[in-house]
Length: 328
View 1 (cartoon, helix red, strand yellow):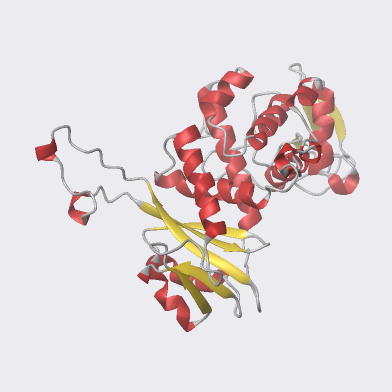
View 2 (view 1 turned 45 degrees about the horizontal axis):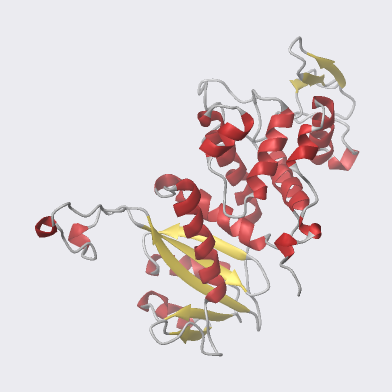
């Protein structure tokens, strides 16, 4: 009997044990080869592009470079999401491995116990990794002539706890009894292709975004929710009524539902709270994991690290501990 890819040896190409057996110099080499892949790990000045800097180390052991062309000092992580890092690079590499090895997500509290770091440091680090993942979706469009994409939405956040006594309870389905904080995660998932997540107040509010990201000629599958009706003016639509069936042979949204299963289980089993201003970050993480479910963990770690090192400092978390200091 064939085993699932995640259970196979091919899915395991990098282990946490391998990272912990690395020296700090080996971790630095790994990061250098990912950041400066064009020069096989030879440092390139992020300021002027100079390719002939010289190396030196601070008394703390931190590897630094000084560009001979412009005289600027920089490190392996200068100008990246990991700028101004405090922990050793080996700890960052271990954090990425632990983060990617989890199928439905890794919460900061568990990571802080795994690595012996503060919860705050791990929380910031994980959000930076989600920010790196978001680069994969920038400008992405899905579908095309004859291709099939599934569209669906699910609400997260804004939970209203029911009153203790039955006589004080209210119907939470009514708008007047809701918190107003619920948001809808929208997923567009191309079959045998990529996915696109977004967050809106409602499914109908996402229509213009869907039309801008789903290419003409795509066959769109959706459920019977009225919010999707307007898509019929641009796409061939196939609808499925979930009160009658999950799939009728013509239409289904099972792959979109699979995405929400991952996101919801991550919310309930790992994070417990994914709403508010960070909901999109968790939606992006679940989408990245869903797209990479048939990719070995070593390749996933390399890709996320590459995205983090190619991106500039975080908008929200650069200098998180010293907000007045520019990341360097």
